[in-house]
Image (cartoon, rainbow, N blue to C red; front, side, top):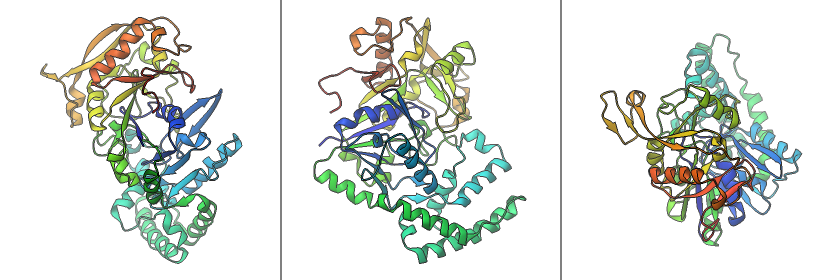
Length: 435
């Protein structure tokens, strides 16, 4: 049966959660394959707003099993708090959530290590970190010495020894680097996390085995990426990236499911571009139009509340990320935010400092910072499109704009969002819609 991947093609915050939620009725499981509680998904349905960080957007749908794959780093207190918060909104996840036992665990010392980065340099702010211990946890995972996985929580004797060794090392290093550091108590941490493990146990299991059994039985999987392809640790605008493969490349390593089992690759983009943190942003707007987009689009981080940098759509970056993530179709989000802007601009190429045309997204940030966008200008539209539900009813200029984005990226647009609610979605191809 066909499976689908939904992945962001910009610097994150593309409203992927809405698309995942809308596609759930044609899938059996939703799988998140990387990241941690640094992801922010906002889903609005029936006038109710749900804010998610760790849990996949599919958790809001009855009959859908949501999976946290091995590629994630999980902070148990945050996971349990999110489960409880949803329960307060009438969403019971019992029997519908599977936490992969190969995922790594964010420990208290990871949060302290992130604070060390903040206090010693401005790097944390520059990189746009959410200060949730995610980067340090991934460092321990790759370093192999102090990494702890969900499965380890259920072997108390060896877990106690793992924590003892890790805390002994972390206390020595952190005490030398943070004058105000209070040494951590390995025993207290162990008992806290063993108690958290008891609460999580109903949700924990072998996610990789379950996913393959579901594929063999004909289940349809929906893979949900966090962040965006330009934040991918390997393919993004390094070093201003996240600590995992946030492109579609992360599916295989982060879930154990080979990419050959995925048939549909949906790349999600905003109708404009936003970014959090430092780093070159060729199409960034520093004028009233940029402020208008931020204000109308409510461009503030779901997790951090930080204002996002806003700019015109960058088709150079879009072409690059669509190729990296293998996108077969585009979902253009927040088109309604552009209503009322007389002239819209799209970066179709760059020019470097010598005036030479640049059509490929540069690898080195110094070169990217030197590039200036080559814009193509299109007429805007004044109509409120938030109530439009069909392609034909969109203003002609809005249709032309969307078509132009698809042509420039080189991938057909199949989904257009004109508002935050699940129903504020236009499906361009009814013959293949949501299949």
